[in-house]
Image (cartoon, rainbow, N blue to C red):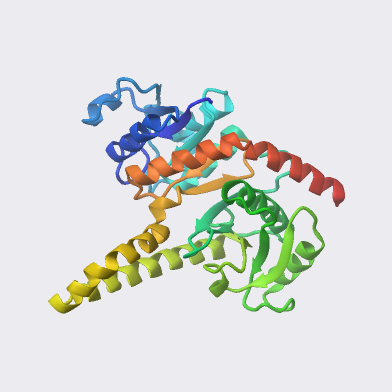
Length: 331
């Protein structure tokens, strides 16, 4: 396969942690190309002499305006990564940098799949003891139209099926109650459209408490709500885990029991750790684009590159293209 284009300068821990993840991916048999400044080798103590390198001498900062940064900095690592996918020099791109700029670069350089109204960020939400729930949109579109949610449902179903092996993913609409009449005008209109749409299995409204259960496989919502949900879950999990380990270590007596429980707790921690999910994917653009957390380390980057390879191997872009075409012809 073509290499995965990796933004070497994206994220809080770039470039060392990003490059370490790339080295581990290459060792696992996944070809990669680093996208970074001409002097990248001097910015890290790691040996990158054997890794292909696309030169990009500008960086879009984490706090920089996304659209403006992409327009002004045409030689940025994000723009060059997206161009590499567009031009056939790379099979996918991944970045832990500015999320908005990553989306804008992918959208402006790769373009949308024909028929897609708006791309959406699909984020895996961990489910203890089960498969992750796919949440989308997780932040690409703060304001949406009801008909866009039917495309999110379709794209999310394809992603769930290809990544997690769910034969017929159950799609739920995030609302404030399970009954069809619950929610604001957007949710009510979307419910009617989702109920009559083809290409996926719609099970009705779901609530926030259902997201981390095995009752639903794909949850669709607008990007504003989805991002709030995502950040709330991330913060809550971190707080609970920190409090739990703090309680275990508060006295020598508790510490002894904690050591006995640790082997059972570590797999649970692994499941809940965001680094294990490999990041989110931007669905609806004409190429594979993985968006990693800003604090991603080598492990998160390795897992993100693995997801990129999986999505390239299953040809998810073409699957979405065909499904969108069929959905449009049915309307």
